[in-house]
Structure formats: C-alpha cells, structure tokens
Image (tube, rainbow, N blue to C red; front, side):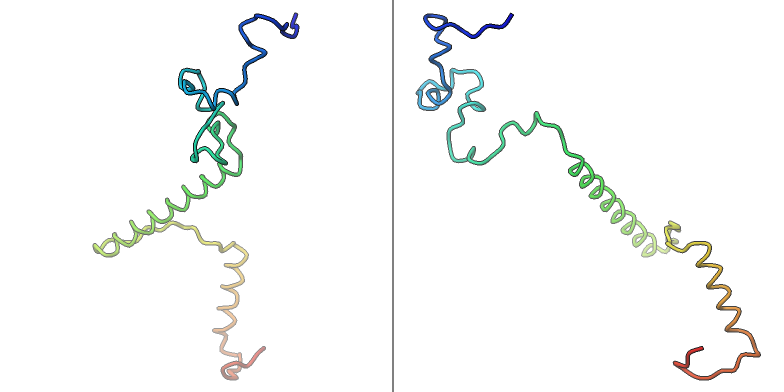
Length: 126
C-alpha cells in the first residue's frame, strides 16, 4: 500500500521545502507559491485559505440578523414615505400583546368606568 519515500534520486522530494521557495528568485514558477510560501507584509497574520473552510453557524446567524434588520429599516422607510405622500401606514400587526393581556386591559377599563367607584384623586392607589 503506502510506503514512505526512499532517499536518493526520486525527484528531490526529500530535499524540497516551502521555506526554500520563499527565498528563491523564481518562486512564481512554483504552483501554489502564494499559499504555501507567502512573502510580504500583507500576508502576515492572515488566513489565506479562508475560502475553503466551513462557515460557522454564528456567522450565518449574524448575517441573518443583519438581513432582518435591513428589512425592518426598509419597511420603516416605506411606511414613512407612504405617510409623507398621504397614503396609509401599513398595519404590520407585530405587537407583543397576548390575548390574556388584552382581556385584562378591557377588564380594567370596564372597572374604571363603573359609576359606583369613588373617585379619590391622582396617585391614590386601590
């Protein structure tokens, strides 16, 4: 199957190193020289193989959140433009009120309108 390469004249595989290619004046003749033997300041500390790696879920979630935020901004701008032009604002129905909250609010309104309740004054608690 697979055996380690023997020494001797076998194409110089045992003598090759990418560090030697960095110093070679004909380094552009080597296939993959820009990734395996990067030279220059712009490569320092950079991941040159970023395109071949899997994307993280965090990055995808951040992109999705950014897209949603942009969509909310576009919707708000469209609503503002519609109001400025004399049209009606779109009803998005994105309130956070539950049915139970709505029932409680209606019940409180009914109690406030009860004529038998004595009016005490501002700030008086029940």
